[in-house]
Image 1 (spheres, rainbow, N blue to C red):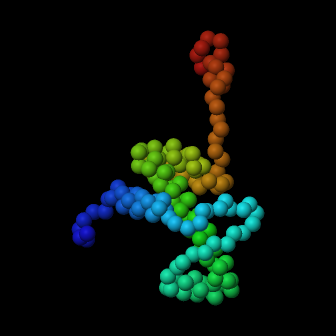
Image 2: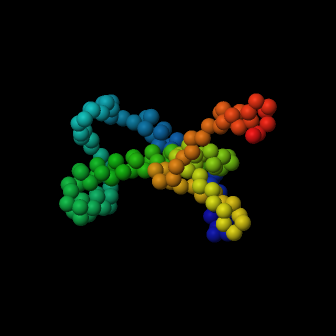
Image 3: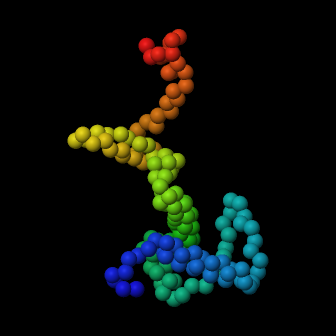
Length: 155
């Protein structure tokens, strides 16, 4: 790829999909014992073959943190699983945003719109979920009719 060539997110997604399909195909033709269900509330032991440099990196992290290699590997695996789950959730959300429904996606994710006028221009800022800004639950049902009164015109 030349440095003048533009990167296309669709190409990246295509490469990711191809790599995942390859991994799934490898998993489908795996050999060995059947996989048992995880025991609830208990830790399970697994055996994993890794390269020398990877083991050295894990051992270095374990020594620096004061944990065992097994515990450090467990923490790294759990962190990577969380990373993959978040990446999948964000990918879905980003796809929705690319389809043009940015505001709907942000609202469903819990962001709160804040309208602000500065220098004669109206801006909409989005506050993160859990921020102290109130999300309006305004429902106009019945209020407009009360304002109009009996003649159907506003009072």
